Length: 462
Image 1 (cartoon, rainbow, N blue to C red):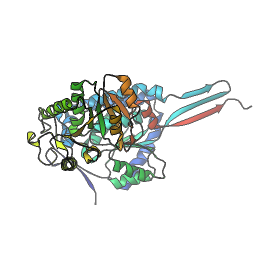
Image 2 (image 1 turned 135 degrees about the vertical axis):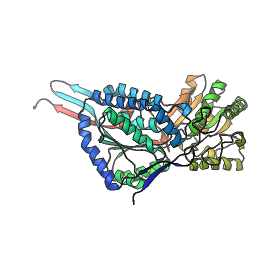
Image 3 (image 1 turned 180 degrees about the horizontal axis):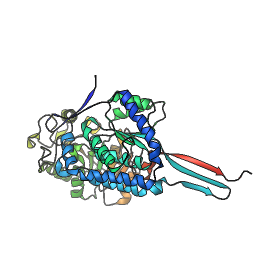
Image 4 (image 1 turned 180 degrees about the vertical axis):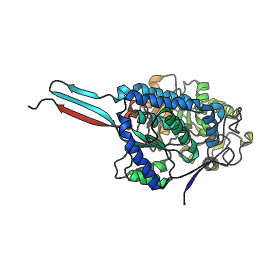
């Protein structure tokens, strides 16, 4: 019997999209087509591959109104925010601009005796397993450089955003990227793991949970397949005694609540110097109370439902456990009547929290944040590092030297000063600890989707 994959809309609980999952034989055939098409694609001039990728993204932009509406149905983001296409454009353009220089040979010697160089060669087939929270942005991070570098790409999108993969394929195929070079396919977990175990791919990029990342590693064990794993975070903010308080509140609370808190690098815990703690908390509460939870198609809605009822249940459980253990909830859920006990979840700020509580240790991925006072930088550093994750950290101070000094002591992938929840395509997107491993964006992103090949050419025989 054919297995069906369903996207349940968080807006109203109905089945928004349903697609048949490929059998293993069907998936193997898709891989074979990609492998057969990849060589011709890699033989095309770099400039042509770049132009086709940029044309595919341009096609996405023409579909923006439709895609924004589809995103709201699939994962609940309010339509007022207009989708993800500014970031998609910026990242595609930057990776296109640096491609020629980054992928050019590293020439060691070119004399009358020897030619010695290192070239970058595509892996062959890159497999992208994409998440639902920023489904276009997270895909383009690997899709654009992988295609530009000469790989074929197979995309498996998240169940919650089934339609996104289809829209990406539609846009890129219309631009002229061959259908076998970029394929969107629907798979269940078992077939996904079987393909990886067969060494079907040269590189696998997975964004998702720690459990999902472990499953990827188990599937790839013994195949020596390259893995890029971005597995979430519990990102901290630290507000120092010299911080711009209003700017810190506005940015950190937006970082905690935007997209219903469903951001890989969202702010999930905040440490505030004791001299600013009371004022920060008061302003943060006022900021959150101004949000409007509701239907994502309502132009006044600033906080939509979480992508799935079970995600909201996880956050409710963390909040309830924290309150039982002594935390104080500062937001009355009655202020948000749209909270239906399902996917629509009222935002929450917790104080009197500690690191024994799940809400300060486990990834929440929802509209809740815990705030703690700290006495000094050393205490803040210890608190920020007391975590299984390491994606980003946000430092608020007017002293850049102080921020850099603290940053060097943090176990994290990116250090921000006076900002948060942002990806700069010129900088490497990476993490440590349970956040995973690998590199996306920047020149290092091209190194992930290619491998080095050395040439030692002796021009004489004596």
